[in-house]
Length: 128
Image (tube, rainbow, N blue to C red; front, side, top):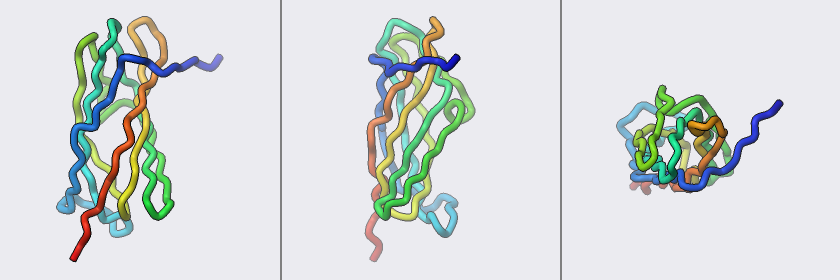
C-alpha cells in the first residue's frame, strides 16, 4: 500500500542566505559553487521529523538536475512545536540557475508530510 503524503501547513522554510563561493572545490564543467543557508520552522502543535529532501536545479542554459536523498546533512532532525532547524549545504552549477524543492517528513502521529522550499537564484557574478 502506498503512503499518502500531504503538504503540511505551518511548516515553513526560509532561505536565509545564498553565497557564491569560488574558493570551494568544484568540477571544471560546473565551476560555480554556491553555499545556501536554510531554516525550517515548525509553527504547528505537532513534532515533525524531516526524513528527506528533493532539490530541482534549473540552470539558465536549460539543464535540469534533480537531487534527492534521505535526511539533511546526515541527520533526520526532529523539530518540536515552535522550534526550528538550520543548516547549510551547497550546489555547484555551470552558470546562473533557479533552485526549488521540498522537504519530506513525518509527524509524531505518523502522518507523512512535505513542505516546499521557496525558489531562489544562484546568480554567477559577471567576470571581467
